[in-house]
Image 1: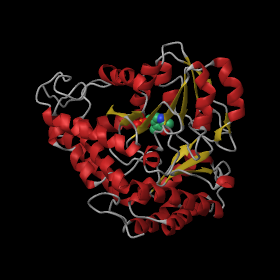
Image 2: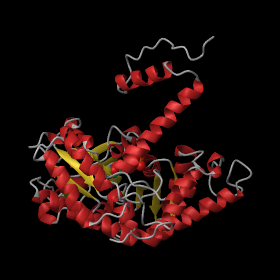
Image 3: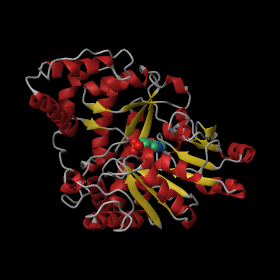
Image 4: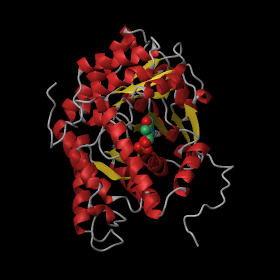
Amino acid sequence: MNQTAPRHYDNSFEVHDKDALARARALLDGARDFAAMGKAVTDAVQRNATWRGEQCVNLLAPEAPTSPGVRALLASEIGTRAAEGHIGPVNRWFAGTRHIDEVEALCVELLKRYFRCRYADHRMCASMIGNAVVYQALTEPGDVIMTVAQPLGGHSSNREIGPAGGRGLKIVDIPMDPVELTVDLESFRRVAPLVRPKVVTLGLSMTLFPLPVAEMKAIIAPWGGKLFFDGAHQLGLVGGRQFQDPLAEGADIMTGSAGKTFSGPQSGIIVWDDPSITEAVTTAVFPIWAATHQVNRVAALALATAEMLEFGETYMARIVANAQALAKALEARGIPMLGSHKGYTRTHQTIADVGSYGRGLAAAQKLERANIIVNKNLLPRDKPEDWDYPSGLRIGTIEVTRLGMGPKEMERIADFMADIVVKGTDPEKLKPAVLEFRQPFQKVYYCFEHGLPAV
Ligand SMILES: *Cc1c(COP(=O)(O)O)cnc(C)c1O
């Protein structure tokens, strides 16, 4: 039997894009043998490495380039080992984990140093899982929680469609001020006592300014409400002292993505100070939400944390300075920017309102044709169902900063973006200039191999 022969496919209920899957099938059907199928995969990875890794100006807020050392650890032998359970010879299911215990213990202790906290967990393959852990540990099905709606920056993990909904929680919106882009504290003061939420989650994917953590914790403390800071995006900034420190301000627990500002391997971490929730959180991680937790990733996370301890303050400060410079430069070229009356941003993100320039999807697609990568984004005036065709763009400065760019380069990037979005220049015509601009920036800085860039 010819094992490469096509089978009969019926993908009428497929949620993924049907054309993309059909192209993959055609590639496999045309492959000489299974080795050729494998090569189709590695070739696609290489195409991405060349295009996104070397030729694009990547301005996605949720991604960061990792250092050579971190990438090497992701491919290391330790990643083939199984180490379910908590750290320590008795806690593990398997023998042979003595060096894995060393690596994981180093990771936990490094995280505690960067976040200046008493407890940390390192085993979540994504921050989304970290949020599931928090809801598992701190709530029961049917409990009421308060979280931020998506058009105002909230994230699906804390809403009905994500882990919070999966836990069976009832969700009430945290009132937000759409102009100040922070919590409407007076409304929160009125609403919270009426619903007495078990947990209040401050988790923003569109995040520009600090949030009133201490004030909100004081409001929910009378009924024992917990303040959960989902710092997926701001994680690196928090540890690097360039953003508010939620635990120090009264948050009970914080989760975050290791692959956003923190600039490590994509995965999740949880940090907290309160001993009374330690057992509930740790046992929600294992055995509920993590088993074989990719020890190579843990090793890479540990090294990334050491990098942030050494370089984090400078690196994070420059990320924020670049975001502010880019926002100012875009506004000067005719693109309205959110939060301009407050200095645009205090994070790695800036948000453009392209409602009068063809909206977010079209603008992002045009920019992509010129090798500039951003994401379409809901603005406060959009409805959640506008998800596919929102009015905004979210622009992040993590990668351009780690590649050694500074305020001068932000002006150039703003020129390119405004040429396409405002003036309607053909992206294909601009692409060679973008390539030439990007070409000299090929080294990842703020790591032990390359130190600081000469900015
Ligand atoms: C990105 C994000 C998450 C999910 O993080 P992953 O590491 O992608 O799972 C959770 N919460 C917020 C606010 C986010 O922006």
